Image (cartoon, rainbow, N blue to C red; front, top):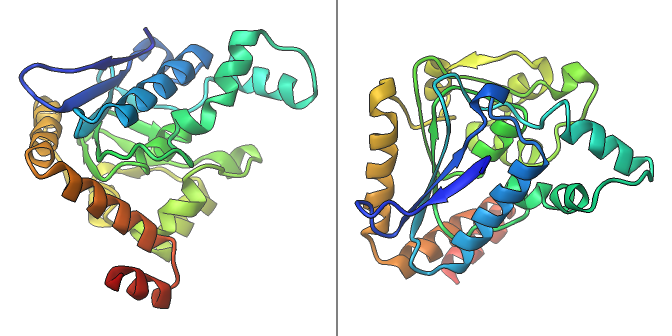
Length: 240
């Protein structure tokens, strides 16, 4: 499977999701989009899963975004009203769910960023609550360099997470930043050695999963709701 969901027995109540296309830079082709969407739905529906961890296979790339050889051409065909295969059509319908853009996982997500996070991979990362990265990781939103609008989480979530000037730098220049800078501006929690990446992410997930699940879910939901409100409305929501 190009994206797989595991429930490690040594980490109760934690789901591990891996994008497993290292030879293709862990890009998101239609089958991967389908598998990711299915994994998120399974996690959202399973009350026994209290936290999820997302990573990429291999040591080079976390996720490079949409597959330029399959997903992008098929999306363009669909936009022109041309026929695509039914399984491709279903996968393209699942893009928003796969990227957690407008789909509420309902469960905290920890990202173990094992390499470069670009475009849709960066976008997917923004849906997480905690992020750990290896020193070699880089981060970029390159859509404007390709004449594209950065849809999904980037324009909505990024300014709320790292502030106006840092978000505009990434969105408008299309220049990559390294892991050290990502840590400085609050894009990731911590840069850790490569061999410590997954253990660190799983330890954080275990800590979350050990807490009262309803309190964790409601705290997560409250923070996310408040982020989308005006200041006055946010204080009202906090006191409700």
